[in-house]
Length: 116
Length: 113
Image 1 (spheres, each protein chain N blue to C red):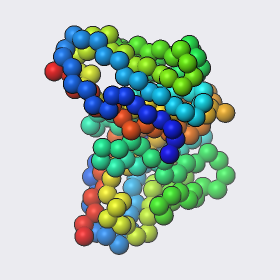
Image 2: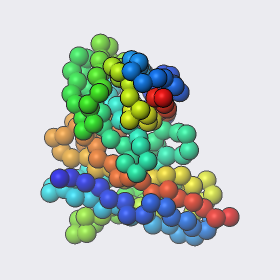
Image 3: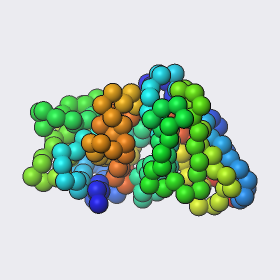
Image 4: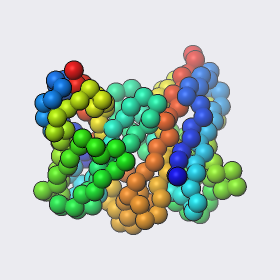
């Protein structure tokens, strides 16, 4: 298994509060991704990073921000959580030798977030 | 727009029976194709991938998939299903010069004893 951990694994929060999810890797991979998984939608990309301090938006980035100050950590922040952000969040990494989506992505165990 | 379709939301098969899960994609060039499996409460595990070359790809756990360009398909197969194969299966497409993987909505496999 790829060395990816996510914390917390479960979180319940209230509408309007800030939330930060952490993804940590021990593989020294260049590319990191945040996805959300919702029934009937598969996984959808929120943000991704192609290096320290290099990030870009995915298809469902509204309401989310990210930061990557170290190779091993990629943080996802919900500035003001809403009920529509209740979801399971997955982090993924890839070595990116040939480019992000042409390289295999490996996934973390997920964080289940509930916004009341 | 690029898309991935998994037409079967649920499939139920008997243990020992063969399995085929369908995946169709929409993309103008040669795609990079993946199948992932997700057990309940777990992350996604890579089963197999196709980048180029032989269109029949072997993966882990006895799975294989065949890329058919003319049908824009990448169907997953297994000759004999085991109860432990019950899970959700996701097909995904990666496109050159993009960092994005596009996932299908998944097929949940149920295995009858």
